[in-house]
Length: 240
Image (cartoon, rainbow, N blue to C red; front, side, top):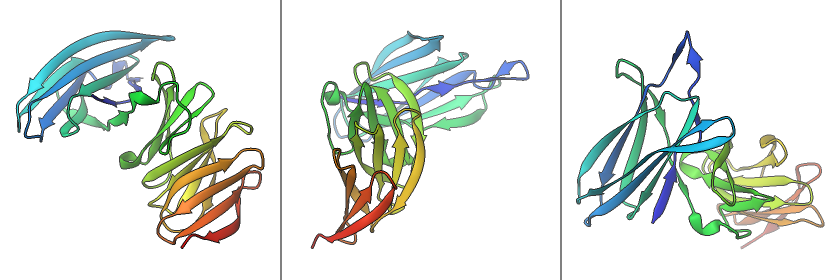
């Protein structure tokens, strides 16, 4: 089963009213087989995450269905569990008169990562899981045990690989589309540096003790070696 999340979405009050009144979700089954979708909605109250939507539906091949959900909370998150990767999910926010005023991307959550260590495209630093969302040029930070969304970090174009140095509390994200590496401070979950590397970087490996980051550049067939202290490329290795 594949799990998708909107991440935590905040819904501030403007001029006495919340901007989003209703969440609208469209499901499209592009598969040749029936698919089941489970829907879970949560709202956040102080430090609590409270489930208020629990539903499911079956989609026949080619079928499109819509659901509408109350969304007048400070913040909320929706998760969708699908039996097929061919189910497309689009999420919109509507105001009180029913006009669509916001769209929200969904990202895949890999439940098999709970309790694991490094895996290309995802990494764990302490109790946090850093997961890239290539379609939306971002990294989602999740609790590694509950997969509860903590924050979202914008990075470069088409992020692919991620690695971490637990000794320095730094996370490195290879952005294939912008040919650079985003350096994230694990304490603040903010990008503190961007390092230009070779063409189409896709994978990251970290030598924690020597504080060196090795980035595989698929396009230029090289490996860039980054100094983790200065955030500069100190060597380029031919990988042909």
